[in-house]
Structures are given as structure tokens and as C-alpha cells.
Length: 142
Image (tube, rainbow, N blue to C red; front, side, top):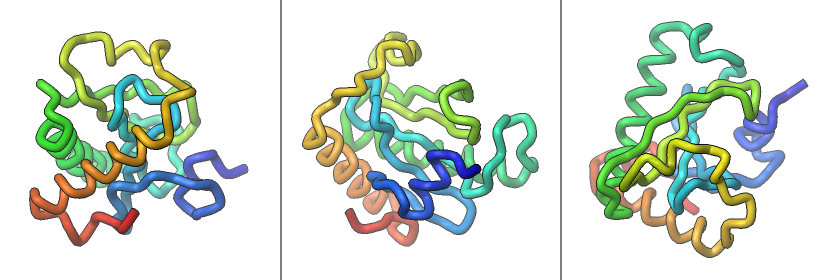
């Protein structure tokens, strides 16, 4: 059975995408720890990140770093948080989020009722920042 992430990637479920390339996508989570909380996900369904082919893990991290730079620059965060947990959905994903302290690293604080307008605005800011950083070819329209 397809994961919820595969369904988002396939367009069967909505997603606020900020990155799309042949191997990796990035979209905002529906339960953010902060506005702009983004998931970097391989298109391939691989449950554990430790089972990824090294080249795909490298690509995931390249995209995570680009998204992290966009989160810091676009949203004015002190840092970009980076977290791999892997228990929520059995499909490898990296959490990238604005971080001014350690609170964002506690996913139990995620807000499943975050305002859609706030998420839409954060996604657009990240897309704009990614374009400004030179990644425009991978940034989809809203």
C-alpha cells in the first residue's frame, strides 16, 4: 500500500510543495512545529533512512541543506532545524524547520491545527527564497 507521502507526491492528496526534482520532493507538513516546517522526501518509498542507497541519501541532504538555507533566509530563523525520526510515516523524510531554540526538536509540540493561510505564506516565502538562492529549476509554482 502506498504511503501518505507517495499519495501527496502523486497528486492524490494535496501538498504545499517547495521543491520537486526527479528523486526528491519537499513540501510543508500539515502539523508544523513552526511556520515553514518542511519535509524532504525521496520519491522512492524507503521506510528507514539507513536503508537508502548512499547516492539518494546524499541527494536528500543536498535538498535539505538548500531548504534549510531558504528557511533561515526567508523566514528569518536563527538556524534551520534538521531531524529524522521516521515513526510517523513509513517513508523516509527529513524535517527542516525554523529554529531559534531547541523547542522545535520536540515533534510532540507540532500543531495539527496550524492556520492554512500561515502555511501558504510560509511555502511561498520558502519558494521565493529558493529561487533567490539559484534553485529555481526545482521550485514549482504554488
